[in-house]
Picture 1 (cartoon, rainbow, N blue to C red):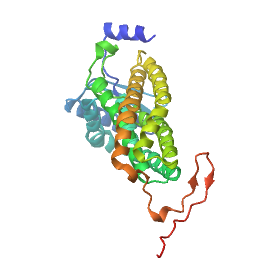
Picture 2: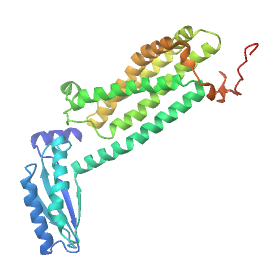
Picture 3: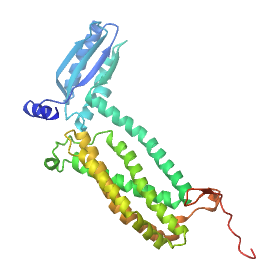
Picture 4: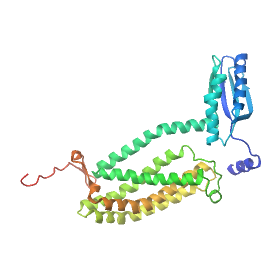
Length: 327
């Protein structure tokens, strides 16, 4: 079905879906409303980015009218968004929006994409804050350290940032189009960045906790931090590598699909997991822990009330620190 659609579009190229202005009134065929729609049409054409064809459809009840206006650009690029902004901020308020008793709304592909992106941007900080806060608290309680969760968040962000960079390079800038079999639309699907952040942060944290658990066990058994880090990397390397190979292979399958959204998701996930399991976990994590040394396990004294989790999973009560003799 997708291949048939692609061949049809190539043989009969069209234009982006138009902006749709929905006009509601007690009677949209009234002279005042019709004059407002006519003024809307003239003002839209005067902008230079809103153009013909412009069509007007009236509902059977005469209580709603749909004005479809061709829009410049690809439909989701900066040109289209600029045209939409002019339509909403200048054209409509100065024409049909001034008619008493008329309610005007704007929709269409460009409007939906723009509004969805705006909603995602406004809510993304709450998602980031929740994920970061929950991860910090869980690692703080598990490893009794404030350095471990801070370092984990920074390293996980590196993996996510690398995935974002690859998506921009390939799909926004249009690199490797012939190799991967797609045509760039000049941007990344709006829902994908936040989706990738949540999924990749969870996967990265899984690797991180597995490695750090082995490191902490070795350190609690009496190993110096340097030796404990080496021990943790060695004992988890096989598991981490095997899991990464499986996930990269599965995600890479999505990159072979014709749907560009699925292709973006597959490439983003595969690249991020590959970078996370190799550069981040195998190089940056042990290097950071070696440089920090015993500071990895730093916990302020006012947090000593936190429960102490044993290696067997039991929770032991916090131990009071011994006072030096003569203190």
